[in-house]
Image 1 (cartoon, one colour):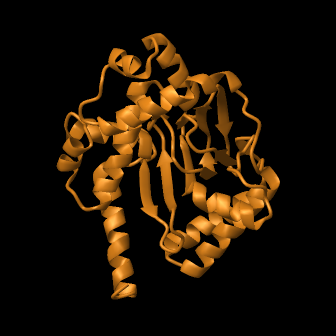
Image 2 (image 1 turned 135 degrees about the vertical axis):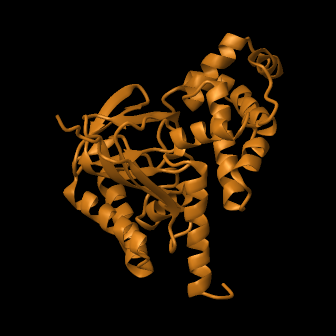
Length: 292
């Protein structure tokens, strides 16, 4: 009886050539599972085939073909196949500054826009996001930048909550400064992080109280948050051209396999593939615009 091979997985992650502050991902996943992670940027993804299932905050959501996923910055989420054949999607990661700037151009009140609904069935938005993504992949700078801004503007008008929102957790304000101090300390000690007891002593709180406050504010326990900081530093070092083995050491990972495991679970591609695509894009820019 012939065996049926599983659909191949593939992923590409790169920077937008014409719009600073935007990364892109095109991927097909079957067995790949994202660990709990968050992004500094917004996440705008369109599902091209299959179903993605993901935990987002306290919800378990499913996104099928043609739907658009709108994730706010720094919200912890996962990601895995929702059907046996997996899912294929295209994702834009626009920076907070870019999205806030577009919102301001639309006349929104000051503040960071947010999306109250995460999975939306909006064929117009899906078509614009996909078209912008395809144009960016083809290297069409004018079309991709135009479609990107038009798509984000339409999504903001239709689906975003613009301006400042009331604080839904006023009780957490009392511990906010302690959490901020803990985040700063973790950022300073990527390679040699303090224990939870040491962090709590520095914050003037009990370990349990700090853990509870930290999770409430960031969506992650301190050790998982630390890995996010390490991955973000690793991306910067890979962009600078450092070899993955050195990046692993400089970013505080135990070794290169440790970096690779966490990096792929958060970014979607291994460090080497990520670095090659980014380097290729920079070389291409120099060829097109020598001296730029």
